[in-house]
Length: 425
Ligand code: AMP
Ligand code: GLY
Image (cartoon, rainbow, N blue to C red; front, top):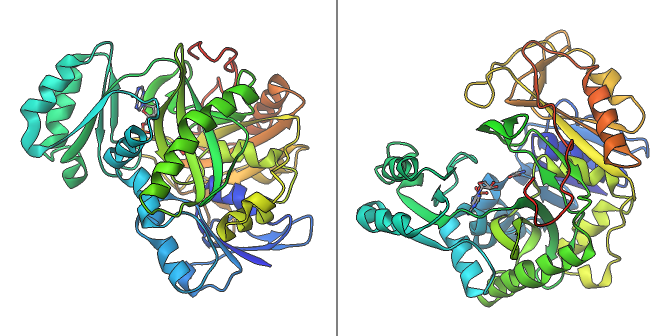
């Protein structure tokens, strides 16, 4: 069996590595880490050819942009078996307004919200003034993860609102916004594999979005993650499934959407129980890099069952009882203006350490075959351990083996894991 993985980051490398335990992988465009042969003897390769031109038994689409753009529909129309929602399902991430409409229709607990267009600045301002405690202003459309302002400063929220609606900060993507109240609590990522009828959760995880320790500095794509989350036991997972995921999928079905792929629920665990912050329509990055190395059952079987609509007849995924911590090495200048081209040393040595998985995020090989940084996030290192402190120690030990000029590593990943669902991290 041959599986095509679409994308080029550490998430796709983690997907490729798990898939290669039971199938060959061709990644497009892939990255220099996705190459060679797995321990089980399956081949991994990366190619510049577009997915439509590659023959595979299953297509797994990593990033949101091709999903929102309808790649899954095009592949399905050509008779391919695909893990990933079509355009209509992917709109859940492509439009924050649609996501909030679906949540509201489904009776899902979420932040109070309203959507506004460029001509409704006055109404948007007065809705902001009604909110208490904190403000969130989001571009309706995709903005590379940068379109969300969360603040307790009303003046900052007003300025951001005006910049977005006028088109000056995000162009067309910002000319429609969702304004909402700020939720308090600790954030949880729960990934759910869906087949259009049935769904099954993966391990709960947390990611670290800010650049610097102590949740300081700018927002990033994610500087690290861990799984599972000690405080999130089966009852919390069931609550998220029963109150958030199930009703939302039912609302999508009622809209005629056949959602086959990964639904990523970003949930705030606060004093009143879980509330939905966002849906993404794909595996999260870097949570995937922590979750998948713990998977003991066959990922290909699970993703193929979701693509085929046969999850109900497939055994649920089985995970190791160990813990995983993923730490990201980012380029100097990341996230505002990452510098590329730094010579990376120690990567293969780090990746060969016991219970360590090295995932390439933004790397390339130069003419001599040496590894160079070529992206904002450059590498992700995941270590498994008997518990989170053990996994954390191993992850940082492995990261200490790697170096490139100006490398940025956040020092407090998994240092104070969520221990009570109501407590902020
Ligand atoms: P989104 O693009 O909707 O995922 O938002 C990005 C991040 O902003 C989320 O992961 C949260 O950390 C934060 N965020 C979004 N909406 C809210 C909210 N209503 N209250 C608090 N934080 C939020
Ligand atoms: N971990 C955040 C994201 O994938 O959007």
